[in-house]
Length: 437
Image 1 (cartoon, rainbow, N blue to C red):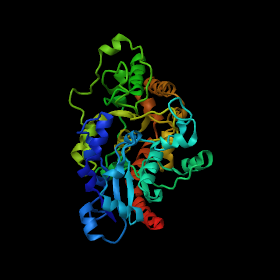
Image 2: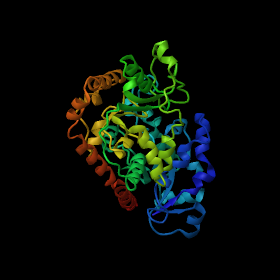
Image 3: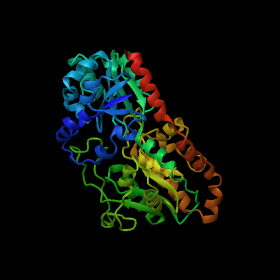
Image 4: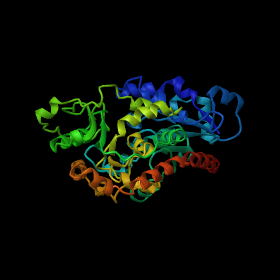
Protein backbone atom coordinates (compact mmCIF):
# COMPACT_ATOMS: atom_id res chain seq x y z
CA UNK A 1 0.00 0.00 0.00
CA UNK A 2 1.15 3.52 -0.77
CA UNK A 3 0.84 6.49 1.55
CA UNK A 4 1.07 9.83 -0.25
CA UNK A 5 2.27 12.16 2.45
CA UNK A 6 4.77 14.82 1.42
CA UNK A 7 2.22 17.24 -0.02
CA UNK A 8 0.77 17.79 3.45
CA UNK A 9 4.16 19.05 4.56
CA UNK A 10 4.81 21.07 1.42
CA UNK A 11 1.48 22.83 1.59
CA UNK A 12 1.91 23.27 5.34
CA UNK A 13 -1.77 22.78 6.05
CA UNK A 14 -1.05 22.07 9.73
CA UNK A 15 0.40 25.54 10.18
CA UNK A 16 -2.48 27.13 8.29
CA UNK A 17 -4.99 25.41 10.55
CA UNK A 18 -2.91 26.24 13.62
CA UNK A 19 -2.94 29.93 12.79
CA UNK A 20 -6.73 29.82 12.59
CA UNK A 21 -6.84 28.20 16.02
CA UNK A 22 -4.16 30.43 17.55
CA UNK A 23 -1.88 27.46 18.26
CA UNK A 24 1.89 27.28 18.22
CA UNK A 25 3.67 26.22 15.03
CA UNK A 26 6.00 24.09 17.16
CA UNK A 27 3.31 21.76 18.53
CA UNK A 28 5.00 18.49 19.45
CA UNK A 29 2.05 16.37 18.38
CA UNK A 30 2.68 17.02 14.69
CA UNK A 31 6.33 16.18 15.17
CA UNK A 32 6.05 12.96 17.18
CA UNK A 33 2.51 11.64 16.92
CA UNK A 34 1.75 12.13 13.24
CA UNK A 35 -0.08 9.14 11.83
CA UNK A 36 2.59 8.01 9.32
CA UNK A 37 5.19 7.95 12.10
CA UNK A 38 3.38 4.93 13.55
CA UNK A 39 4.31 2.77 10.56
CA UNK A 40 7.56 1.54 9.09
CA UNK A 41 8.24 2.64 5.54
CA UNK A 42 8.42 -0.30 3.19
CA UNK A 43 6.81 -2.69 5.68
CA UNK A 44 3.33 -1.37 6.49
CA UNK A 45 3.15 1.32 3.83
CA UNK A 46 5.41 2.57 1.09
CA UNK A 47 5.70 6.32 1.57
CA UNK A 48 5.69 8.11 -1.76
CA UNK A 49 5.69 11.74 -2.83
CA UNK A 50 2.90 13.19 -4.91
CA UNK A 51 5.32 13.89 -7.74
CA UNK A 52 6.70 10.36 -7.69
CA UNK A 53 3.22 8.84 -7.59
CA UNK A 54 2.05 10.92 -10.56
CA UNK A 55 5.19 10.01 -12.50
CA UNK A 56 5.00 6.26 -11.88
CA UNK A 57 1.31 5.54 -11.13
CA UNK A 58 2.16 2.31 -9.24
CA UNK A 59 -0.41 -0.45 -8.92
CA UNK A 60 -2.03 -1.21 -5.59
CA UNK A 61 -3.98 0.63 -2.88
CA UNK A 62 -2.91 4.26 -2.44
CA UNK A 63 -4.07 6.84 0.09
CA UNK A 64 -3.57 10.57 0.39
CA UNK A 65 -3.20 11.16 4.12
CA UNK A 66 -4.93 13.90 6.09
CA UNK A 67 -2.94 13.70 9.32
CA UNK A 68 -5.37 15.23 11.81
CA UNK A 69 -4.13 16.64 15.06
CA UNK A 70 -7.58 18.08 15.59
CA UNK A 71 -10.87 18.12 13.71
CA UNK A 72 -11.43 21.59 15.13
CA UNK A 73 -10.00 23.34 12.08
CA UNK A 74 -12.84 21.80 10.06
CA UNK A 75 -15.22 24.05 11.98
CA UNK A 76 -13.58 26.92 10.12
CA UNK A 77 -14.40 25.34 6.76
CA UNK A 78 -10.79 24.61 6.02
CA UNK A 79 -10.77 23.24 2.44
CA UNK A 80 -8.25 20.40 2.67
CA UNK A 81 -8.78 19.39 -0.98
CA UNK A 82 -7.26 22.69 -2.10
CA UNK A 83 -3.99 21.41 -0.60
CA UNK A 84 -3.89 18.43 -2.95
CA UNK A 85 -2.17 18.56 -6.33
CA UNK A 86 -4.97 19.07 -8.94
CA UNK A 87 -3.68 16.15 -11.01
CA UNK A 88 -3.93 13.93 -7.93
CA UNK A 89 -7.46 15.21 -7.24
CA UNK A 90 -8.49 13.95 -10.67
CA UNK A 91 -7.18 10.48 -9.74
CA UNK A 92 -8.92 10.59 -6.34
CA UNK A 93 -12.24 11.17 -8.11
CA UNK A 94 -11.78 7.77 -9.80
CA UNK A 95 -10.95 5.98 -6.51
CA UNK A 96 -7.51 4.85 -7.62
CA UNK A 97 -6.19 7.05 -4.81
CA UNK A 98 -8.45 7.37 -1.78
CA UNK A 99 -8.36 9.67 1.27
CA UNK A 100 -7.23 8.52 4.69
CA UNK A 101 -7.89 10.66 7.76
CA UNK A 102 -5.50 9.74 10.57
CA UNK A 103 -6.99 11.06 13.83
CA UNK A 104 -5.59 8.67 16.38
CA UNK A 105 -3.81 10.66 19.07
CA UNK A 106 -6.57 13.00 20.26
CA UNK A 107 -10.25 12.80 21.16
CA UNK A 108 -12.48 14.51 18.63
CA UNK A 109 -16.03 13.51 17.75
CA UNK A 110 -16.69 14.24 14.08
CA UNK A 111 -20.43 13.53 14.43
CA UNK A 112 -21.32 15.65 17.48
CA UNK A 113 -24.89 14.31 17.36
CA UNK A 114 -25.19 14.57 21.15
CA UNK A 115 -25.12 18.36 20.73
CA UNK A 116 -28.04 18.57 18.31
CA UNK A 117 -30.52 21.26 19.30
CA UNK A 118 -28.06 23.03 21.58
CA UNK A 119 -27.95 26.79 21.94
CA UNK A 120 -25.10 27.20 19.48
CA UNK A 121 -26.28 24.83 16.78
CA UNK A 122 -28.96 24.75 14.13
CA UNK A 123 -32.20 22.99 15.09
CA UNK A 124 -32.65 21.73 11.52
CA UNK A 125 -31.05 18.34 10.98
CA UNK A 126 -29.47 19.04 7.60
CA UNK A 127 -28.03 22.39 8.62
CA UNK A 128 -26.78 20.89 11.87
CA UNK A 129 -24.93 18.11 10.04
CA UNK A 130 -23.41 20.59 7.59
CA UNK A 131 -21.63 22.32 10.47
CA UNK A 132 -20.30 19.17 12.14
CA UNK A 133 -16.83 17.95 11.22
CA UNK A 134 -18.30 14.93 9.42
CA UNK A 135 -20.64 17.17 7.47
CA UNK A 136 -17.90 19.63 6.51
CA UNK A 137 -15.84 16.74 5.13
CA UNK A 138 -18.85 15.59 3.08
CA UNK A 139 -19.68 19.02 1.74
CA UNK A 140 -16.02 19.76 0.92
CA UNK A 141 -15.76 16.53 -1.08
CA UNK A 142 -19.07 17.23 -2.80
CA UNK A 143 -17.77 20.66 -3.80
CA UNK A 144 -14.83 18.95 -5.51
CA UNK A 145 -16.95 16.09 -6.92
CA UNK A 146 -15.21 13.39 -4.86
CA UNK A 147 -17.42 10.48 -3.69
CA UNK A 148 -17.49 10.21 0.11
CA UNK A 149 -17.18 6.43 -0.09
CA UNK A 150 -13.48 7.05 -0.79
CA UNK A 151 -13.04 8.41 2.76
CA UNK A 152 -11.26 6.20 5.32
CA UNK A 153 -11.12 7.51 8.89
CA UNK A 154 -9.14 6.20 11.86
CA UNK A 155 -9.57 7.17 15.49
CA UNK A 156 -9.55 5.69 18.97
CA UNK A 157 -13.28 4.99 19.21
CA UNK A 158 -14.27 1.36 18.93
CA UNK A 159 -17.53 1.45 17.02
CA UNK A 160 -18.93 4.19 14.79
CA UNK A 161 -21.78 2.06 13.38
CA UNK A 162 -24.39 3.09 16.02
CA UNK A 163 -23.72 6.75 15.24
CA UNK A 164 -24.01 6.13 11.51
CA UNK A 165 -27.33 4.34 12.12
CA UNK A 166 -28.57 7.28 14.21
CA UNK A 167 -27.48 9.69 11.48
CA UNK A 168 -29.45 7.69 8.93
CA UNK A 169 -32.60 6.96 10.97
CA UNK A 170 -33.00 10.20 12.95
CA UNK A 171 -31.34 12.73 10.66
CA UNK A 172 -32.16 11.18 7.30
CA UNK A 173 -28.53 11.39 6.19
CA UNK A 174 -26.71 8.51 4.53
CA UNK A 175 -23.02 8.63 5.33
CA UNK A 176 -20.69 6.02 3.90
CA UNK A 177 -17.25 6.72 5.36
CA UNK A 178 -15.07 3.71 6.20
CA UNK A 179 -14.14 3.79 9.90
CA UNK A 180 -11.30 1.98 11.68
CA UNK A 181 -10.09 1.63 15.23
CA UNK A 182 -6.52 2.82 15.55
CA UNK A 183 -5.20 4.33 18.77
CA UNK A 184 -1.72 5.86 18.76
CA UNK A 185 -1.37 5.71 22.55
CA UNK A 186 -2.15 2.00 22.67
CA UNK A 187 0.19 1.33 19.76
CA UNK A 188 2.99 3.18 21.53
CA UNK A 189 2.32 1.21 24.70
CA UNK A 190 2.28 -2.12 22.85
CA UNK A 191 5.70 -1.24 21.43
CA UNK A 192 6.96 -0.49 24.93
CA UNK A 193 5.96 -3.92 26.23
CA UNK A 194 8.28 -5.43 23.61
CA UNK A 195 11.30 -4.10 25.52
CA UNK A 196 9.98 -3.69 29.06
CA UNK A 197 8.49 -6.26 31.44
CA UNK A 198 8.67 -5.07 35.06
CA UNK A 199 8.02 -7.21 38.10
CA UNK A 200 4.81 -6.50 40.00
CA UNK A 201 5.52 -4.88 43.36
CA UNK A 202 3.11 -4.51 46.27
CA UNK A 203 4.26 -1.37 48.03
CA UNK A 204 2.44 0.83 50.55
CA UNK A 205 5.01 3.59 51.02
CA UNK A 206 2.32 5.71 49.35
CA UNK A 207 -1.33 4.83 48.87
CA UNK A 208 -1.54 6.35 45.42
CA UNK A 209 0.21 8.21 42.62
CA UNK A 210 -1.66 11.12 41.01
CA UNK A 211 0.38 12.83 38.29
CA UNK A 212 -1.67 15.90 37.39
CA UNK A 213 1.08 18.33 36.39
CA UNK A 214 -0.25 18.85 32.89
CA UNK A 215 -2.78 21.56 32.11
CA UNK A 216 -4.57 22.17 35.46
CA UNK A 217 -8.01 21.40 34.12
CA UNK A 218 -11.05 21.47 36.33
CA UNK A 219 -11.24 17.74 37.08
CA UNK A 220 -7.54 17.52 37.98
CA UNK A 221 -7.60 20.58 40.21
CA UNK A 222 -10.83 19.46 41.88
CA UNK A 223 -9.47 15.98 42.65
CA UNK A 224 -6.26 17.29 44.22
CA UNK A 225 -8.20 19.95 46.12
CA UNK A 226 -10.58 17.33 47.56
CA UNK A 227 -7.64 15.11 48.54
CA UNK A 228 -6.11 18.13 50.28
CA UNK A 229 -9.36 18.86 52.11
CA UNK A 230 -9.40 15.29 53.45
CA UNK A 231 -5.74 15.47 54.54
CA UNK A 232 -4.72 12.81 52.03
CA UNK A 233 -2.04 14.59 50.02
CA UNK A 234 0.79 13.24 52.17
CA UNK A 235 -0.43 9.69 51.49
CA UNK A 236 0.28 10.00 47.77
CA UNK A 237 2.76 11.08 45.11
CA UNK A 238 0.96 14.13 43.74
CA UNK A 239 1.83 16.80 41.19
CA UNK A 240 -0.28 19.78 40.10
CA UNK A 241 0.29 23.23 38.68
CA UNK A 242 -1.52 26.18 40.20
CA UNK A 243 -5.23 25.84 39.23
CA UNK A 244 -6.52 28.25 36.64
CA UNK A 245 -8.72 30.99 38.00
CA UNK A 246 -10.68 30.70 34.79
CA UNK A 247 -10.24 28.62 31.64
CA UNK A 248 -8.86 30.27 28.47
CA UNK A 249 -11.58 28.56 26.45
CA UNK A 250 -10.73 30.47 23.28
CA UNK A 251 -7.51 28.42 23.08
CA UNK A 252 -8.69 25.25 24.79
CA UNK A 253 -12.18 24.65 23.46
CA UNK A 254 -11.93 20.96 24.42
CA UNK A 255 -11.53 21.77 28.13
CA UNK A 256 -14.55 21.16 30.32
CA UNK A 257 -15.62 24.67 31.32
CA UNK A 258 -16.77 25.01 34.90
CA UNK A 259 -17.22 27.93 37.24
CA UNK A 260 -14.04 28.58 39.16
CA UNK A 261 -13.75 26.79 42.46
CA UNK A 262 -13.55 28.95 45.53
CA UNK A 263 -10.21 27.45 46.55
CA UNK A 264 -9.06 27.83 50.10
CA UNK A 265 -6.14 30.33 50.08
CA UNK A 266 -4.07 27.82 52.07
CA UNK A 267 -4.41 25.36 49.21
CA UNK A 268 -3.26 27.91 46.66
CA UNK A 269 -0.21 28.67 48.81
CA UNK A 270 1.16 25.14 48.38
CA UNK A 271 0.94 25.26 44.58
CA UNK A 272 2.59 24.02 42.48
CA UNK A 273 2.96 20.49 43.82
CA UNK A 274 6.12 18.78 42.56
CA UNK A 275 7.41 15.30 43.20
CA UNK A 276 11.16 15.83 43.36
CA UNK A 277 11.84 19.30 42.01
CA UNK A 278 13.03 17.89 38.67
CA UNK A 279 11.45 18.51 35.29
CA UNK A 280 8.69 16.01 34.67
CA UNK A 281 9.69 14.42 31.37
CA UNK A 282 7.05 11.71 31.21
CA UNK A 283 5.03 13.27 28.38
CA UNK A 284 8.09 13.89 26.22
CA UNK A 285 9.32 10.40 26.99
CA UNK A 286 6.11 8.83 25.81
CA UNK A 287 6.13 10.87 22.62
CA UNK A 288 9.70 9.91 21.83
CA UNK A 289 8.88 6.29 22.55
CA UNK A 290 6.31 6.36 19.76
CA UNK A 291 9.04 5.71 17.22
CA UNK A 292 11.74 3.96 19.21
CA UNK A 293 10.84 2.73 22.71
CA UNK A 294 13.65 3.42 25.14
CA UNK A 295 14.05 1.41 28.33
CA UNK A 296 15.87 4.24 30.09
CA UNK A 297 12.88 6.49 29.53
CA UNK A 298 10.58 3.82 30.91
CA UNK A 299 12.73 3.52 34.00
CA UNK A 300 12.35 7.28 34.48
CA UNK A 301 8.58 6.87 34.34
CA UNK A 302 8.76 3.97 36.76
CA UNK A 303 10.19 6.25 39.44
CA UNK A 304 7.01 8.31 39.33
CA UNK A 305 4.55 5.45 39.76
CA UNK A 306 6.33 2.89 41.91
CA UNK A 307 6.25 2.80 45.69
CA UNK A 308 2.48 3.36 45.42
CA UNK A 309 -0.40 1.00 46.04
CA UNK A 310 -2.40 2.24 43.06
CA UNK A 311 -2.34 4.82 40.31
CA UNK A 312 -4.98 7.52 39.64
CA UNK A 313 -5.13 8.49 35.98
CA UNK A 314 -6.36 12.06 35.52
CA UNK A 315 -7.24 11.78 31.86
CA UNK A 316 -6.98 14.44 29.18
CA UNK A 317 -10.72 14.95 28.95
CA UNK A 318 -13.69 14.26 31.14
CA UNK A 319 -16.77 14.70 28.97
CA UNK A 320 -20.07 14.83 30.82
CA UNK A 321 -22.17 15.10 27.65
CA UNK A 322 -20.92 12.56 25.13
CA UNK A 323 -20.79 8.89 26.23
CA UNK A 324 -20.31 7.86 22.59
CA UNK A 325 -16.84 9.39 22.50
CA UNK A 326 -14.72 7.66 25.15
CA UNK A 327 -11.01 8.21 24.76
CA UNK A 328 -8.12 6.89 26.85
CA UNK A 329 -4.56 8.20 26.59
CA UNK A 330 -1.05 7.35 27.77
CA UNK A 331 -2.08 8.61 31.21
CA UNK A 332 -3.91 5.32 31.73
CA UNK A 333 -1.88 2.98 29.51
CA UNK A 334 1.26 3.73 31.53
CA UNK A 335 -0.37 2.06 34.55
CA UNK A 336 -0.82 -1.13 32.52
CA UNK A 337 2.73 -0.99 31.14
CA UNK A 338 4.08 -0.60 34.70
CA UNK A 339 1.70 -3.24 36.14
CA UNK A 340 -0.09 -0.93 38.54
CA UNK A 341 -3.72 -1.14 39.69
CA UNK A 342 -5.50 2.01 38.55
CA UNK A 343 -8.49 4.32 38.91
CA UNK A 344 -9.52 6.51 35.97
CA UNK A 345 -10.86 10.04 36.33
CA UNK A 346 -11.89 10.39 32.71
CA UNK A 347 -14.81 10.03 30.32
CA UNK A 348 -17.93 8.20 31.42
CA UNK A 349 -17.67 4.48 30.59
CA UNK A 350 -13.87 4.49 30.37
CA UNK A 351 -13.73 1.21 32.28
CA UNK A 352 -16.43 -0.22 30.03
CA UNK A 353 -14.24 0.54 27.01
CA UNK A 354 -11.30 -1.24 28.63
CA UNK A 355 -13.51 -4.29 29.22
CA UNK A 356 -14.48 -4.26 25.54
CA UNK A 357 -10.79 -4.35 24.65
CA UNK A 358 -10.24 -7.40 26.86
CA UNK A 359 -8.78 -5.73 29.95
CA UNK A 360 -9.89 -6.38 33.52
CA UNK A 361 -10.37 -3.72 36.17
CA UNK A 362 -10.61 -3.71 39.94
CA UNK A 363 -14.20 -3.87 41.14
CA UNK A 364 -13.23 -6.81 43.37
CA UNK A 365 -11.04 -4.48 45.45
CA UNK A 366 -12.98 -1.20 45.31
CA UNK A 367 -16.31 0.09 44.00
CA UNK A 368 -15.95 1.15 40.35
CA UNK A 369 -19.39 2.69 40.15
CA UNK A 370 -17.74 6.06 39.57
CA UNK A 371 -17.31 5.06 35.92
CA UNK A 372 -21.01 5.67 35.28
CA UNK A 373 -21.57 8.81 37.35
CA UNK A 374 -22.83 11.67 35.17
CA UNK A 375 -20.91 14.54 36.78
CA UNK A 376 -17.28 15.30 37.48
CA UNK A 377 -18.01 16.16 41.08
CA UNK A 378 -19.66 12.78 41.76
CA UNK A 379 -16.74 10.89 40.28
CA UNK A 380 -14.16 12.90 42.18
CA UNK A 381 -15.96 12.41 45.51
CA UNK A 382 -16.24 8.67 44.88
CA UNK A 383 -12.50 8.37 44.15
CA UNK A 384 -11.64 10.35 47.28
CA UNK A 385 -13.80 7.96 49.34
CA UNK A 386 -11.83 5.02 47.93
CA UNK A 387 -8.55 6.59 49.07
CA UNK A 388 -10.08 7.44 52.45
CA UNK A 389 -11.08 3.81 52.93
CA UNK A 390 -7.55 2.55 52.26
CA UNK A 391 -6.03 5.29 54.42
CA UNK A 392 -7.79 3.76 57.43
CA UNK A 393 -6.27 0.31 56.87
CA UNK A 394 -3.06 -0.99 58.38
CA UNK A 395 -0.33 -2.38 56.12
CA UNK A 396 -1.33 -5.96 57.00
CA UNK A 397 -4.99 -5.18 56.26
CA UNK A 398 -4.06 -3.67 52.91
CA UNK A 399 -1.95 -6.70 52.01
CA UNK A 400 -4.82 -9.02 52.86
CA UNK A 401 -7.38 -6.86 51.01
CA UNK A 402 -5.31 -6.73 47.82
CA UNK A 403 -4.72 -10.47 47.63
CA UNK A 404 -5.04 -11.64 44.03
CA UNK A 405 -4.69 -8.24 42.39
CA UNK A 406 -1.38 -9.24 40.78
CA UNK A 407 -3.30 -11.67 38.57
CA UNK A 408 -5.26 -8.77 37.07
CA UNK A 409 -2.29 -6.48 36.43
CA UNK A 410 -0.37 -9.34 34.80
CA UNK A 411 -3.42 -10.17 32.66
CA UNK A 412 -3.70 -6.54 31.54
CA UNK A 413 -0.03 -6.36 30.65
CA UNK A 414 -0.34 -9.54 28.56
CA UNK A 415 -3.48 -8.31 26.76
CA UNK A 416 -1.73 -5.06 25.89
CA UNK A 417 1.41 -6.80 24.67
CA UNK A 418 -0.59 -9.11 22.40
CA UNK A 419 -2.86 -6.49 20.84
CA UNK A 420 -2.75 -6.71 17.04
CA UNK A 421 -5.27 -4.02 16.07
CA UNK A 422 -2.67 -2.32 13.85
CA UNK A 423 -2.48 -5.44 11.66
CA UNK A 424 -6.27 -5.71 11.65
CA UNK A 425 -6.53 -2.07 10.58
CA UNK A 426 -4.08 -2.49 7.70
CA UNK A 427 -5.80 -5.64 6.46
CA UNK A 428 -9.25 -4.01 6.60
CA UNK A 429 -7.99 -0.83 4.94
CA UNK A 430 -6.70 -2.78 1.95
CA UNK A 431 -9.91 -4.81 1.75
CA UNK A 432 -12.14 -1.73 1.84
CA UNK A 433 -10.04 0.06 -0.76
CA UNK A 434 -10.97 -2.54 -3.34
CA UNK A 435 -14.61 -2.66 -2.22
CA UNK A 436 -14.98 1.07 -2.90
CA UNK A 437 -13.77 0.80 -6.51
